[in-house]
Image (cartoon, rainbow, N blue to C red; front, side, top):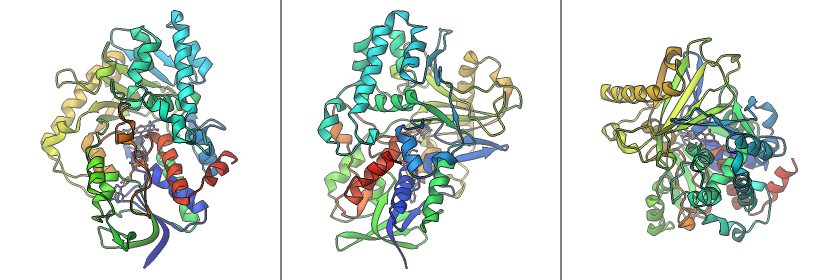
Length: 503
Ligand SMILES: Cc1cc2nc3c(=O)[nH]c(=O)nc-3n(C[C@H](O)[C@H](O)[C@H](O)COP(=O)(O)OP(=O)(O)OC[C@H]3O[C@@H](n4cnc5c(N)ncnc54)[C@H](O)[C@@H]3O)c2cc1C
């Protein structure tokens, strides 16, 4: 019988952060992962010897002393990561149809202001007001600042601030509004819905410092898993948990699809909260709670093209591009079949071989799950292969060609640089991550009713906790903070935060 202090279901960044932190606290940890590869959205894959990130493309907050840096330093992985600092004068460049400018979002607040003033010299007051607003909101989130004794009241007042209203209140300049919102795909900003704190917490981390992972983000997962194993714990792959057995008011074991049982004192689920609750029918979880979680809206999914570039044909750059059609920044998720895509994000990942020219490129555009309805009954991952059929391949090719035509407008000659490409759809994310609809970032937040999407890491089953992007916010940073929140909730004290701050 396998008995652990903590059994963690899912090896996304949230689960691995919990596992690594708790192993460092001396606990005997076991992480159960359904896929061949650990990491969830940190997974990478290879085509023609070229490495691609399936999800994460860049990370903020990794500068010395910054929030994610401190956590990674405490966990002894910071100096082992292969990172590349992005262009300090423009980690993201916003490009808009009918406009030849590349608007730069720069690192460091003064530099951020300076770079935007090159395009908007009349707007200094508004740009400074924006920066002040972002920083002020971030200050209200104690864990984000690795501060203890934080109270809910501290942040309550900013949870109900709307992104659209706030941006429109600081400037009437439509172009500046569009630039400040240009990397919308980082958080799927929806008009009159997305709270400003989501925008602020994410943008602030990148303005503080932006980094790409050399040879992909999976290195983060591997290093965290190594920590767990070195502390005597286990990370088990190809292990899909199907049941959480409750006896005498607590979970006794997690059962895998192959019948193996993993006994534990505590359980942490890193998968979608509703999926977690589907694994146990205990009456400790009220029907109303299940219904509420099941009814929460998710962020939209995406379609991605992963391109192997012909050697020596496309110059490498240390920034990303975010494109949108003029006037459509708030409608990106609201496309029609005729006008898709209204925007895209373009990333060139660095590899240890990269010099002057890029080896690879990934382009991402929003795509609704419903578009994949004809193939929704299929399931395909590397460990459970199924051919989704010729019509699916034709759909992907059709969409890829539309996207490439659009990208070619801003990057003339790109098509000639393509050696080969592969695509991923909402179904790829659904099957690899184990969610319902391939959602990019899980449960969507809404400023009009902040408590509705607030999910506590604690559940009514006393030894079951939740973690990951659906608790707190998404992203490598957001899910890491979520992991911290889960650990301090489980341990009943905030000592870990002090240790991280002093690492
Ligand atoms: C396309 C895309 C691009 C992104 N780009 C960025 C970016 O550039 N920067 C950034 O910071 N963030 C980015 N994100 C967001 C970020 O990757 C996620 O928010 C974060 O990685 C989610 O972590 P998580 O802890 O919630 O776990 P997830 O990554 O959701 O992982 C959950 C894990 O649980 C496993 N699992 C599910 N069901 C079971 C089961 N029954 N049994 C066992 N295991 C199970 C899954 O296989 C998976 O490994 C991106 C996300 C996507 C999808």
